[in-house]
Image (cartoon, rainbow over all chains, first blue to last red; front, side, top):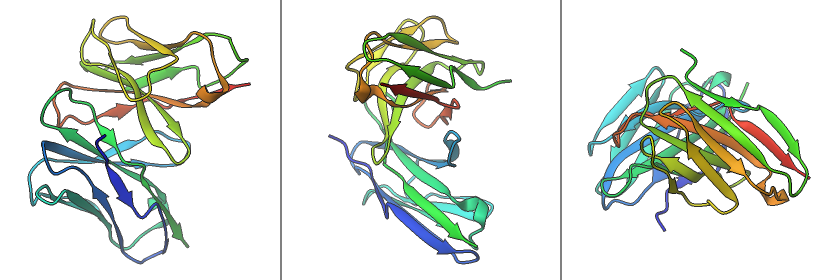
Length: 113
Length: 113
């Protein structure tokens, strides 16, 4: 069983504060790590796809880093806004076999106005 | 460009009834996926299709069948619905390639009584 774990499961952050959370994944046979943002009553939307160790991606106030050797990725949100409230999913892709994504269970972020 | 579409949006079934969930994408993607989402379980892969004419089991295939009708369409069938199949079902698609972004449909909420 290939485990992709995310922590914390849920998080409450004051508006304006910055926050981060973690995705842990198998470091062997790594090919790619995907991050998705999932708002309530909607479908997941892609944020980033990362493949290289040390990679850093940024979209507005959201950024992510990747460490493939130790098997973790961090997602950072700077200056949280109410619209950042969502569940953030990561998904790991192996470099062998089929190309399917293995998802973590997500970090549910709530921004307190 | 509609992206990934799913029908129906919501369905109530009685135990033992059958139904087919429809999914279509207009992005010329090779791969298509069916997931179910249950509280605390994240997204679990039911079946996927890497290309037209091929289908493979995911983590939780029991009780389901799929058909990749053509490149655009991928349907999920419940032959004899059970209460344990009450869930939200998401279809997704992406180009072949391990770093390809995956696009999700809006989901089908299924209640089995």
